[in-house]
Length: 343
Ligand code: F6P
Image (tube, protein in one colour):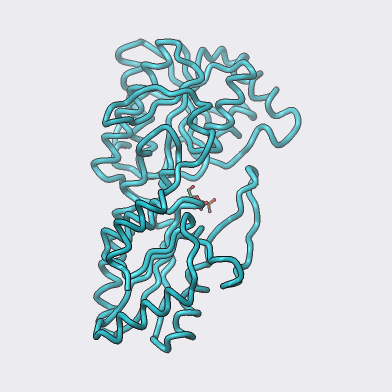
């Protein structure tokens, strides 16, 4: 078969491991010809490709990023782009396409499947917010990067008796903040699923310091939301899928903590450091399992499906189910596990 592969949306550690697994099994076991589309859906629209074979994939397993490039291009935004994308697949005689991406990329994969393309999806995102899969690769690595940073923030916070606000990614889901905050021993974790009242947060921090605690780490998810009317936030630009560009809430929270408590407060925004560099061993293995399962799905003709992790097993789920709604942190569960460590 001729099988196209693309990586779309924000990159994350483990993408190259998926590509390598698809190519290895596709070429060696099925005798496939693999073709890489450059820069996500943009490469399909414009017909820009790179050859993919086992030789070209040597050494990429531990490399972050994606050898194919990525973009947040949405073919359903500009008239004619869907037609161009379908024509590219037909002109290049592609039997199948494997789309590795998050909610947006897989949403396009689902629609393009309905419009006639033979697509299989692979879930990726550091945000871990995709339904139908218990985990996405990239998440584990991002959390570990955050925890390493928080461990370092702890020691300097203690030296100076400071509050350290650490802003992490995750878009509208608090998975990274919750895992990193719990693993890093944060005094406060602010997530989108549980709107916060800054007055309550600062009261708890004050009580903690009055009991003689030196230093508090406050982990803030970039999408954390204040309770209505409690704290004003500026809103950012939007991308091609209509998502607001998040980031900056950490500085607002830090300013407010210092103003209300008088404790010296600093902010660290981890930003794209969370997406860069080598994947953890866990993510390399999960990405490899997903890549193998994706090329198997292609050969079984399981188009319109995504590979997913459920109960520790890699299974296939309809793409529709994967993109129907975001997987978010259950506020009840969060309060039960994280609550006892606050205040
Ligand atoms: O979806 C992954 C993610 O890293 C989000 O956590 C974050 O909000 C967004 O992408 C940042 O996107 P960009 O790389 O376009 O700034």
